[in-house]
Image (tube, rainbow, N blue to C red; front, side, top):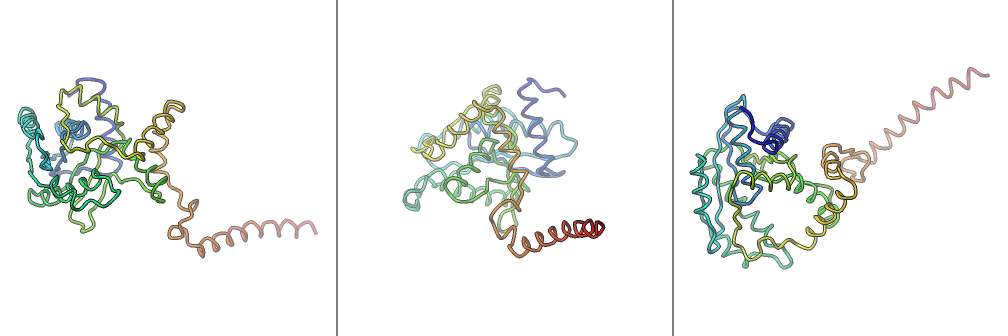
Length: 278
């Protein structure tokens, strides 16, 4: 079965590579796709459905939308689109929007808190419907933006994993679009005629100044040095702990021992050479 367009084939190829590299989908999986109605989650749902029809293994999909309770949210459009495409779906109505102001810490971004609350809802639903994996629509740009945000503003060298087991070990979160760029996800969603829906939150789309700066920095670098985003993504899979300063990864005692062993290895041949000259 061939793909309809070159873009669809490219997105499918990159998604397949991520699935293979990180063992994201296995035979018999029931995958719950977090479907917000945004471009990334639509691209993920459509791509996984394409792969499901072509894969040598059997797995099923169910789209789950968490309605935060904001007025005028078009959950009916999501339901209608899923029905038209034959996708199993569930819309979970919540009051997350009503409690945001009460629990939001001063200076915190509402989007990050909302994401954590919605993640909790997804975990609950995953248990109720027997989902073995929870698929989220984070793409390549999300990975490298998170890397730089943590590096610049949080003092941590971390991004996000393609496969994550929850703290209690009950859920597995996967991010199959790890190799797909944001621009590709946007174009593919448009190409498929999928309706992009905002969450209707007053802060929706209002990125923090830090994230805006990081996105602009990466965009400028990519223009000046094409391929820099791919290089950053490659770096996330090419970590060299001995060249960092975290003593948990490279304890000073082990470092001293390794240096001593190397010096000894270098000294013995030298002494042998000097002895032969006498």
